[in-house]
Amino acid sequence: MKLRDAPSACPSLWRYLPCPPAELRLDLVLSSGQSFRWWESSPGAWTGVLGGRVWTLRQDGDRLWYTVYGEEDEHKEEEERDGCPAKAANLDVAETDRILRDYFQLDVGLSALYRAWAVADPLFRKVANDFPGADAETRLRALGFGYRAKFVSGSARAIAEGLGPEGLCQLRTAPYAEARRVLCALPGVGAKVADCVCLLSLDKAEAVPVDTHVWHIARQRYGVALGGKSLTPRAYQEIGDFFRGLWGPHAGWAQAVSTSLPATLAPHPMPLPCPPRYLPTPGPVLC
Image 1 (spheres, rainbow, N blue to C red):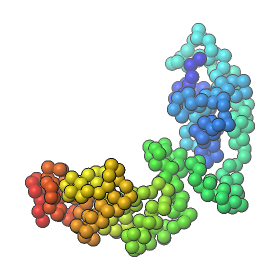
Image 2: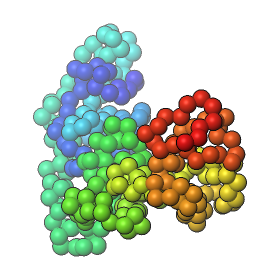
Image 3: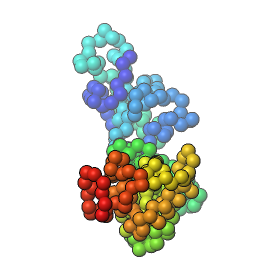
């Protein structure tokens, strides 16, 4: 039997139920240890047995798509059109909808339950906030954010429920160390991301984002022997402090220019770079 993995394959044999991801996530529910009859037959498509039939399910935005296989799928001698059975399974659409709604208990509003449980139980509220089932995360994954989707949606939720828009804006006038501390408390935000936000969005010109590239520049161009085989939090701080001591209160601007210069234009020791408003020209650059 040939499986159909998306509505684009034999569109006439697929139907859907309105179902936002906040109410049901196939990737979480069907992959759990409490579900044994389903497998991910292709990325995003889940195939299993329900009501004596073989089904394939798929989610797309606010739609829960399904296709049900019948006897015509099992007979290869049956005439096909574009790889599809010549006739659809003899199914009652209202009945298949009912079976699916009953199986997933879709008539029970999960979002409303979450809100009620969160009000009654602070511990549940924390666990639920950490649980990757929010609609925002699903949409971000669909847009290509990958593993970062959980952190982006989590940070947005933490800001909405904690700092708020006004508190976030107030970080522009907060000391650099305080602003970075607040940002690092957000889900998935480390020192480098916090420094990027401080430098590019919060007017903290002294913030120096450090990654392995900047770490190698510090070691190879300036002879700064910090850190061992990995960029530890201590080494990160010391490298930032080194450049702040070298370049002053606008060290973040200078770092942006420094990392953009090809290695051939930056012999060791490297001269102090021009401010960002000037573009480097071929040959050694001295301001």
